[in-house]
Length: 172
Image (tube, rainbow, N blue to C red; front, top):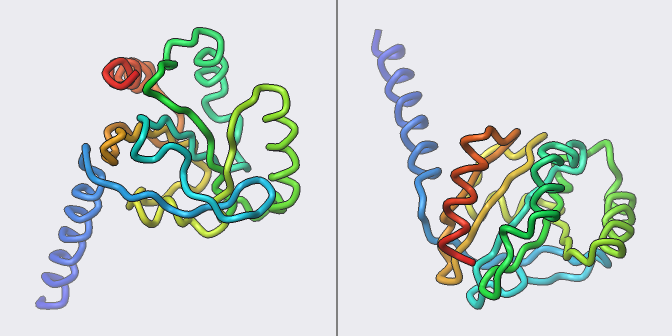
């Protein structure tokens, strides 16, 4: 009986901890990831501009592609105070060799001028307490004060997209 009680108590505690970790806004710190040449680098403009970050599992890089294509076309999330870039979550993409993922990203950045970085060890997701990001497209907005103010993981619903645009309008 005591074992069941303590198991239930532990499960409840873990659920509350996971929910608390997802509360927004919350303070985050700059982290060191890699550029596409494998050199260590921090997140660009951290603390200087508001950041729109696409944290993408290369195994599922087309998840939310309609949203990202529309975002590029409509320029609605652009502004002098906002800087957008991508970070590949390489640790959760064992089927795509790191070199191949970097090569594909380099080709894409040549055509659209975007900045893409690489996270080989889940450094960003661990440091920011994002939880499971495997097989997920993660959309984040970080204020120049270093607060994570928007976070969605996985396929975006119409409500998620609407909430994103409402939030980003305050940070452009």
